[in-house]
Amino acid sequence: MTDDARNQMEILAGSLPFLKRYDDQIVVVKYGGHAMGEEEAAARFGRDIALLEQMGVNPVVVHGGGPQINAMLKRLNVQSTFVNGLRVTDAAVVDVVEMVLSGTVNKQVSDCITRAGAISVGISGKDGGLIRARKLTRSYRDPESNIEKVLDLGFVGEPEQVDPQVLELLIAADIVPVVAPVGVGADGQTYNINADTAAGAIAGALSASRLLMLTDVPGVLDAEKRLIPEMTVARAKAGIAEGWISGGMIPKIETCIYAIEQGVKGAVIVDGRVPHAVLIELFTDGGAGTLIVP
Ligand code: X2W
Image (cartoon, rainbow, N blue to C red):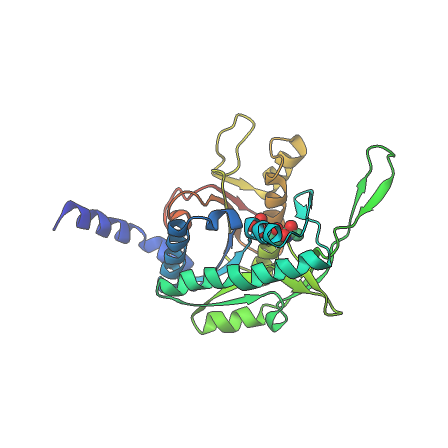
């Protein structure tokens, strides 16, 4: 036996207790558009998810596609802007968003997983009544006039009700669901939903064991810029209030907190740039990134 083979077997044996921990458990993985760029990284992601399925875990993938939407809007000469990290979505933009997310990107992701040996089916939040959405309404204080105003982002939605039945049927049939973050209103209007928000709501509705948010940072850093391996919801809330959790990390942490309050057992900010980050997080002692627990 070679050293390599022996190492491989040691790793396999070492993962046994973790295999038991996640056996038949649902793990929701948020896969962002930035992480999909490179073909090799996308293929590796597909293999990791297929491996999870083969190990007896039930992965559910919720993907984004911000950069892919930007590229298509540019090709079609449609303008769009962002406010507080959310895309202002008018009637022309929402058509492109649905086309890219539920079309190209959704099928690319499910294909990567299927080619790696699992059966994966891509759907959007509009399929099977998965995500009923309503128009997102947020108010803000206008700094110039100091008057409370309502932010109008057009057809940006937030999940109003998530019915996980279609996902449960796919999971029971050993199919890996891949979800595009597009929802439908009571009146049939299509809504563009931030992918992090959609992943949090889906993880909550499924009472998932884990929500893994793949990002392009190592995790949450404390005030001294050291990586925090694990923290409670209370500490995460304090981090936002005290300002050492800031910027783009705030909505991600808020999504994690929301998912945990909905019954998810733990939510993790994972560095998706690290090869096999999902497997390292689930099947090693130290994990990867920052785990947030109740
Ligand atoms: C996002 C949906 C895609 C997304 C957008 O239009 O870009 C809103 O901003 P990433 O790749 O995860 O950023 N929706 C309302 O969230 O993709």
